[in-house]
Length: 275
Image 1 (spheres, rainbow, N blue to C red):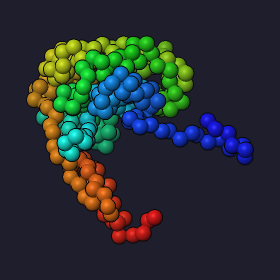
Image 2: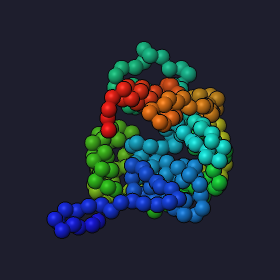
Image 3: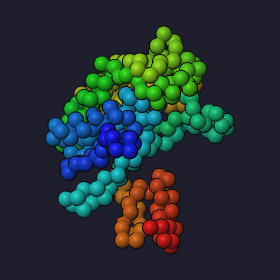
Image 4: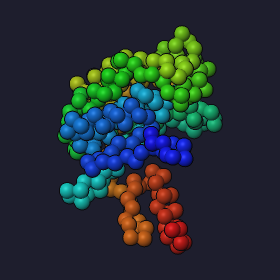
């Protein structure tokens, strides 16, 4: 912090010449920074950050989720996208859903793709092994993290829902009560999961013991995910779409990724003076 003569407080400018990390939580950004400082490249750091987010904001991010990673390789001038957005389970029927069931609960999820996507990107572009990249997240999960104000807000707003599921209460509530800012939560089972995946690869997540635990739990709660859904899933490499905006070329993942709307908005803005 810098205090000016007027008494106003200013944040000092962040600078660097070898890279930067930005995420939704400072501990996750720190995890990525640790990997860079150990000699890792951008992909190593990105996956370390994503894994750490699984620990520090589990309501937003996780290895059981889905997404895209867009990568630019400056040495080859190559743009690529790893698509790890899973489909709905194969037995999904729209008649099973109402608005609430579409948004949360055991029927709401897609086939989890992040594990495949992270490890595929690491294998193709990373410079470190999975155990090294997952290590910051493992340490956070095993040693515990102190909750921020925003963490506490998310948990407190969902106490009733977490109590509906035994594992939700066990992992995220303290004495069956909402944790508050500064409380420390431990996620030792998540750390164990990361260690197993680092040792055995994505196969344990999609065809091995973790896959069996995931599908049994989902089905016990009324979900539709099967071992076949997991075993037949694999992330895929695609090419991004692009458009020009004034003197720039903008790349983004192709539909169904919603980044298309950013490209459309830029083309509309090109017709106006927005200096």
